[in-house]
Every structure is written in C-alpha cells, then in structure tokens.
Length: 613
Image (cartoon, rainbow, N blue to C red; front, side, top):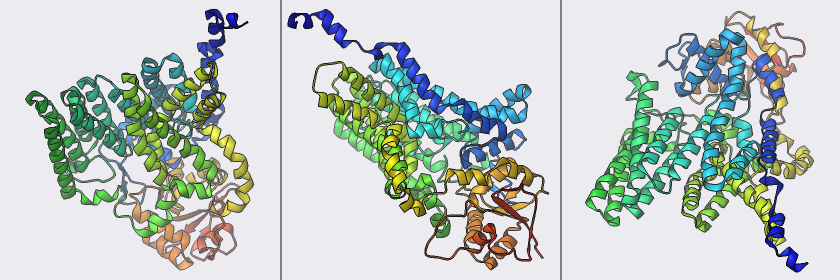
C-alpha cells in the first residue's frame, strides 16, 4: 500500500479539489452576488424610490436640478435653507453619468421608472468595474481562481454590502474603484512611467470626486517617493508619472467642475487651491526625479530634494489654508458637532461602536484590520518580486485606511477596497492547504484567517450574543432601521406633496426625503455646510416651546414636521423636550400651531401649519 500511495497517480488524485472547477466557483460567485443583488430589493426603489441613505437622496435631488436646467457651475441646493440656499461641495462628475442614464431610460420607461432604473443600475455598473479591474489584476498575479474568489468575497464584506447595493448613487463606490485602480497601477514591479501616469490620473479624478481618499492618495505618493529615494533612477519614472498624472488630472477636472469665479477660493471639503498645491508639489518632485536621474544624484541628494519640496508644500499650504489642517468641518459650532456630527455613523469611532453595537463594529471593522495585518505580513514574507510588490503597495494603502477606521468609521470606505483582494488570496491558499499534506492546525489557521476577512462570518459569531445583550444596551442603540422607514413612508410624503409649497422645519434627517419626494423647501438636512439650518433644527428639537417658536419665526417656516417614532428613544437623566412630547401627543399644540389632517391614518409623521402673527 505504501508503494501505491507514493505513486504520482495517487498523489495527483489526492491533490484534486472541487474548487479546481471554474463552474463550481462561478456558481458560488452567483450565489454570493444574489446576497448583494437580490431582485426583491428592487421593488422599493422602483415603486417608491426609497433609497438606502440620505446622501443618495441628496444626490438624486441634485441630479434632478441639473436635468431641470440648473447650471453646471451652480451647485446650490436652493430649496435648503431658503432663500439663499446651500452650495454643495459634491462633484458634478458623479451627477453627469447618473443624469445621462436617466435621460437614456426616460423615453423607454418614463421619467419615474427611469430614475428608479438608474438608481438600481449605477451601483451595479460600478461593482462590475471593480470586478473587471480586480479580475485582471489578480489573475495575472495569482491565477484565475483567486480572481473569481474576489467576486465571492466582496459580497460577504460589510463595505460592499453597503456602498454597492441597489440605490447607492453616492460617490463612495466610485472612490473604492478609484483606490483599487491606483493600487493595481502602482503594483507594477517595473515601476514604469506609464503606470505612474495612470495611477496619478485616477488619483486626480478621486480628488475631484471627493477628498475621502486623500489619506490613501497621500500614502501612495509617499510610497513612490520612498521608492525613488531608495532606488533612484529605477523608480523615477513611476514617481514622475504619479506626480504629473495627479496634477494634470486634478487641475483639469477642477476647472471643468468649478465656476471660474471660485478658482481662487479655498474649500477644505472639496478640491480647491490648497489641494491643487499639494498635487503641484507631487509633480515638482516627479520632475526633479527625472532630472536627478540624468545628473546621477545620490541617495543623500534625493533625500534633500524630497525634503525641500515637502517643506515648500507645507509652507505654501499653511499660508493659503491653515484652517484646513483641522479637517473638512471647519467653522462647525459645538452644538451642531455634538448633537449631529458626533452621532453620524461615519464619524463614530470603533471603540464607540464596540460599546454600543459590538456586532456591527466587529463585522464592519475587524475584516479590515485582519486584512491590513495580512497585507503587512505578506509584504514581509513574499519572495516573488511581482507578488511582493503587490503586497507592499496594498499594505501601504490599506493600513492608513484601517487606522482611520479605528477613529472614524468612514475610513472603511477606502480601506474596504482591498479586503476582497486579500480575502480571496487567503481563501485560495486555505483551499490549497486543505488538499495538501501537513499539520491540521496549520490548515485550520488558514481557514480561520480567510473567514476572518468575511463580515458575514463575524455576523454569525457575534449576532447571538448581541441579541442576548440587546436588552441591557438598548438605550445606547441608534434609531432602528424600522423607525427610519416609518418616518419616510412614501404615502405620507405623497400627502405632504399635496399641501401648498412652503418651508418645512423638521428633524435634520427628514430633510432629504422632503426634498426628494415633495416640492417643499426645508430648513435643515444632514449636510455639514448647512450649519445655520442644522443648528435651528437642533434647537427646535431639544428646546422649550419658546425656543421652538423663536426658531420657526427666525427661519420663516410654514410647516412643522415631526416624527414620533424617530424621537422615541430612551434618554435617561433629563426631561423630554417640548418637540418630543408634541410629536407623541402628550402635550396639546399651542395656539400658534394648527394640526393638519393631511397625512394617512397610522402615519408616524405629524404636521402643523405655523402661524407667524
């Protein structure tokens, strides 16, 4: 028996695996994708245009304004905090393809269905783009099975379940695709100029779309700079390409999406002169790298060049935009910061999430942390030059995002782009280990490592204890999704739309559905430039009757809209504010508020007409 077991035929038979079949993997990918793109989730979008997030609603409102004739360079939402309105910092570069799809579908489906089809299709198209980019990159380095496993792992991760689901027309999914493209371009072991130009151009596009990926773009720049300082002329092309591509792309797109009279205005939350200065610095050091290669400058000289350009960038940035060092939310007062910004899920820290919603925290953040550690470990262990370069680049980009995610959940959006890649690699190696001789403990460790990068695996482990602990922690939980759905029921907004147009004062999160589903203007919406409106809404929601009356008069509101379900949460230690009691009906309406019977029976919303005399 020993001689038979040792024959090549027996060893080949022992090494066979069902996962060597592309058909099986394709079936598994389709099953995984069904979890992300279940056709039953299309009904709310097509029937009532119920989008997953307030940002998606605000995006569609802006697209509608563009299609209605609002100027390309006029980003103001005129129905928010009228009469002046609030200028948006969001990019028209995302509005344009969405508007184009709506125009293309309208003659076939009608306008309402065209909007629903576009909101459903846009994230699918971006996921397909992600899959194509990842598939080509991973197949070249790790083979066809790993490339297919990327598409299996991605729908198992929380970030993808969030930003690529039907209806997500916000820009985070586009940013994930951009970050992936940057990484794959920089992973070129030959470090060619053309790859640097591609990476830089995509980085400029990402900056024009939004600044969320700025830390990762900066980390990519630091990586190619370190490459050049260490290796000189061999890495000069990649550095020069990255700098030239980013400066050229960001400058061009800035001019295309920004009104000429705003070209000299600093905006900390959008592409503007201080960020273009940093891109110019990257182009400068890239040009210096090419010159240094011709002059045979040594490592010390390269360090000096990098230091001088870096110092010049820092001085220039401090001179023109010192306030931007504190982040994009400059000028926000303490009331809005504590009552709104600190409560936004994207801004909450991992420890905060862990205390209040441990199952959500672990399933969202832990796969990213595990993937980051895996990338670092593989960058140190891998010996094949092309694969080692891949792991170095991915580690350099995912680690900053993972660290940001520990302090602010929004770091997940860019770091999450790499989890499917690393999870697929780990899963492929676990599959290979299962059919190879070796330690059972080693095989188990590889399987656990792969599963640890799947958010759904964390959900299976953490959901049962979370349900057991829920009664003890219910006071710290965020408003349930069911409450949000009750406060945004389409029938209620259809009824509100039949009222004469006016300015509505309501909870901050009710602003986007009001703008999307009615013709009314709103005082407040969850948008950080809407500081005056949000402060008014917070004061109205948390103050006395006198405060509520003062705010309605100051903002010229015609209607007061409250949702009794959304306000119904435990808050021990202080009495309920007047607006909460009014929404619940536990206090009578004052004589300056006239209840309106416009809403359907059983609606969670309540609305009053405001008397201004």
